[in-house]
Image 1 (cartoon, rainbow, N blue to C red):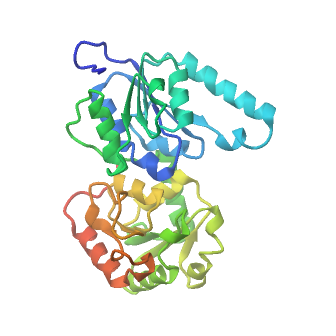
Image 2 (image 1 turned 60 degrees about the vertical axis):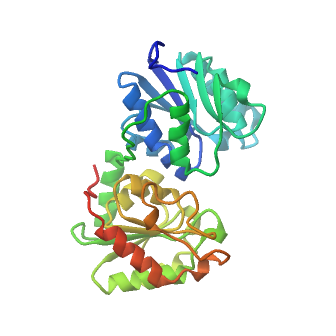
Length: 340
């Protein structure tokens, strides 16, 4: 086993890999902080998809970001795709990395790990036959929360994991943009604000919008400000929220959406990446989750913040009262919820 604490030289130049998705990127945070704790003087570079790259400005342990424009590679322009791919390969080979940690473990990331030429390469192994691309490949344990699995990968490769630190500090420019959004929407930063992100990437994971609207009416009647947030494709589906006079944001960059959530008193959402980043930013988050139970991707270190239907029932059966109760629990938890 490669163990940098048992006689091997500590790596000076580390590459971490996680291309997608937003939530899975958030789940690398504790592991990224653990890498920094083990190697405080190393340079840490993170390879991710270009759409996620701005979020890495909130990873204080990361020194440099390499972004991969996957859309350009798949846009149907072979010469442009080849140019982008060769540029990435040259960058990775020239990086002089002494350690690569592949948190994703897909075929493309395993191959990119090998291509770096790093003498030590650790990775999650999802499918047989990829182990040879790493100097140490650990079979993926799908029973674990992804954040805990990332930590287990590091531990099994010899790192010491002592204090688990799930910490995200939205980039200053994103926080400033979020503050400007507040001002433009005539929102008062001194008043409690509830942030909703009701739509997920999978329709079966969506709690009915009407239930989110019922919660929004409830908290607005008690003096809270309301923000409904979504992606560029969510504008039409969130029109009912806009029709009721709620603030709706569907055209913000990912890092600004994360910063906006970090400025709010409470986040209520489905199983979304922005909500997981809000957990890491220290905000109370209630997630309405599909399946027969909360599942594995509950708010990290806060399983009590997840609300799910009874086994065998759909997500639409989750009552509004259950979400209100979970919100009360989250809001009353002791601790400092300040951002940065």
